[in-house]
Amino acid sequence: MVRVGTMAAVVLVLLGTACEYGRQELDRPDNHSPSRYVWPLPEGFPAPRVPPDNPMTTEKVELGRHLFHDPRLSGDGTVSCASCHQPELAYTDGRSRAVGSQGNIHPRSAMSLTNVAYNATLGWDDPSLIRLEDQALVPLFNTQPLEMGVAGRENVVLVRFRGHRRYRQLFFKAFPEDKDPVTMRNVIYALASFERTLISGNSPYDRWAYGGEVDALNPDERAGARLFFSRRVNCFRCHAGFNFSGPVVYEGSGVSKPQFHNTGLYNEDRRGAYPKPNTGVHRHSGRSEDMGKFRAPTLRNIALTAPYMHDGSVATLEAVLDHYAAGGRARSFGLDTRAIGPGSATDPLITGFELTPEERRQMVAFLRALTDESFVRRARQ
Ligand code: HEC
Ligand code: HEC
Image (cartoon, rainbow, N blue to C red; front, side, top):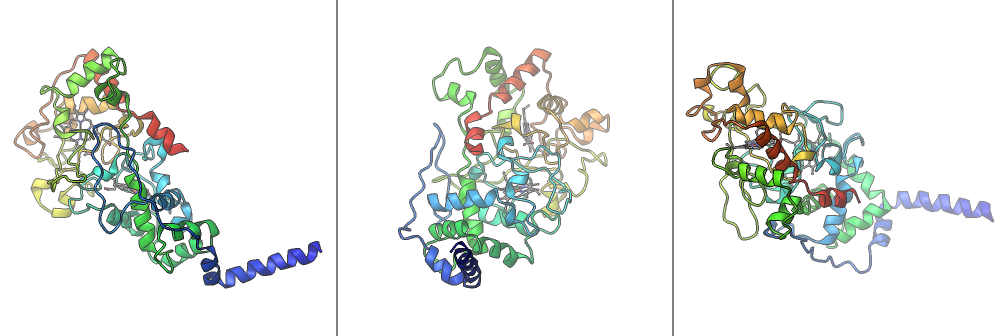
């Protein structure tokens, strides 16, 4: 009896593999109208803008969450989105430069995905990348540098999910209208939906500023906040608004003009050149005035995302402050300062300032108070 049972099971498994399509029909869940996703928005946060062709549903988000963390989504099955965007590091990887599926080194640092739904442009320096649906193609299909190595292996990857019972159900629930929902387009749309849910706004600073908790910040952190928002130190001019970042878009917002700044990190040629290939917007436009211009990333969860800057060349928050205090680190290399001071490639807001050791400590304390522990805890679950 046991034997027959085992045989039958083997035959069923074989049949199942052979009749992929038949089984998909069987797996289709009965009740499959997707439910509208409800944003758990923090106080003071607008609703993210969602493209009309990819409305948010809990089912799509759920599928996207699985895909984001699954190395089967890479060509050789070794790297997931989460390898470079680790939830416990606010979706970064702790490296100065990211490492792709064949061990290749990306020229730039993996960016935090904290509140990524709001960014007016995506990536360190690309003015034309504005939809998460388009951005996901970059790591999946890029060959220079290779990140997930899916190009030319699309079917290998899709067959892995088609052959997986749980995934077939997730795909069917997320895209109930599709006959064969296991497609690259749907992978990308589900990933984008998941990414839009990565909203973080419950730091001690938020509880102090919006939640009426007067003790959520200690006196040092409050003093640091005052410096951050002061005209002397000017951080808030570029790391602005509820997201402490460059321009944002959200439901009902107007079109946001992309902004990029040269903060004076490099001066290769005494005229403010940045080392190739990381020349910022210049890399895309070829225009000399775009040399070294990058997007101001969010400072939320910044204590979790070291090392800093597009190439991870600044190790600590203290060193970040020293860079800005010097009016751009390149200036302190002792080179021709006229070339990188006001009126040069370096942004006019990068003027330099002096901080006492106590003020420097207070500013770091404030930046650390932008950490949202509940965001990281939620992500770990
Ligand atoms: C090999 C490491 C690596 C992998 C794997 C990876 N990323 Fe990234 N990610 C990066 C790097 C590096 C950047 C910055 C790229 C740039 O602008 O130069 C980035 C940037 C991003 C951004 C832009 C964030 C912002 O604030 O503008 C998003 C969104 C993103 N990745 C999503 C994903 C998704 C989704 C996946 C999986 C399909 C993924 N990444 C896989 C390294 C990686
Ligand atoms: C002129 C606009 C501007 C001002 C003013 C400014 N920043 Fe930035 N910030 C940027 C840009 C642009 C980047 C990315 C630069 C790069 O990678 O080359 C950045 C990067 C950072 C980073 C690293 C982010 C990451 O994810 O790696 C930190 C931290 C930071 N800034 C903090 C501050 C603080 C603190 C101040 C005030 C002392 C400040 N910034 C003032 C534009 C600005």
